[in-house]
Amino acid sequence: MRGNTSNIPAAGIRNGSARGIWKRLAGRLTRSALISERTARLTLYVFMISLSFVFVFPFLYMLVTSLKSNEDLYDFTVNWVPTVLKVENYIIAFRALGYMAYLQNSLLITIVATVGHILSCSFVGYGFARYQFPLKNVLFFIVIVAFIVPVQTLIVPLYMLFANFKWLNSYLPILVPTFFGLGLKGALFIFIYRQFYLGIPKELENAAKIDGCGFLRTYWLIILPMARPVFLVSIVLSMVWHWNDFFEPSIYAPHEQLSILPARLNVLITLVESPPEDLFKLLSVNGKDNTINNAVVMAGTLMVILPILVSFSFLQRKFMQGIERTGLSGE
Image (cartoon, rainbow, N blue to C red):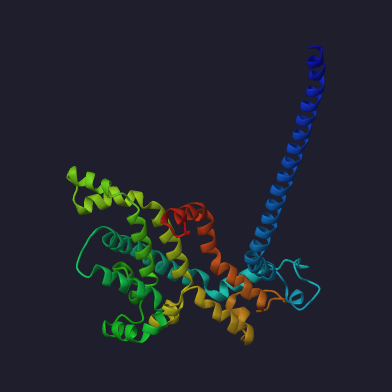
């Protein structure tokens, strides 16, 4: 009995030392995992900041260059901090572009075409998602082909068609097709709406039919309120594409009075290359150092994209949420 009791302290010491070793080992593993996690997070942050700089750099360059004087443009030592902030570049660009007049043209095309795409493409996409009709798969295949084929390959027959309608020199060839699911990227919007509607449970519509709702009432009261995310996605995409597109307006509405704001940047480039002598008298701009240069072009470019930047800054959070819910994120 005495021999057995004498071994108890030694066993306790051994057990205590083993527990201490395991605690130290667990502490080291915890510190190692924490260091690995922080290293991975730091690497991710560096990568994301570097990637974001690639996208932000053109905007920063445009903003800085738009505020440079003519001397700063040709001074290689002036890169990111102009010696003098020449705000007059924006006044010159504003008047040379005829900003307000052509802004109205761009807003007209963008707003009306966006409304047309929302109304028509959502309706067509719902039909493809929910109803069976003859040649449904063939027609949807045609929609996909219409998205793949660029408009430049079809511009000649479209031009002849609209010429027979006597729609040329107007915005009708651009606006009217959007109300029939066509127009710029209309096929893509149909596809987006179809994919979203396929994810809505059919039991909701069946319950609405039991309550006596018809097709239009079910679509208006049940489906459309649920489709707010995809509506926001289509609004943002349609606004950006119609605002920046000057190919179709230059073909169907070539008159200068019908020109849109982005197309007016060519006027600034022409003035840089060969400015008329009485230019600043025509623009009603005074000043000895005023000139048309690349800084004025950058100022005009920033003013052209400013409406889209402002709109997207207010809508970007809900836009990203809409991208996730419509299935465009790849998940």
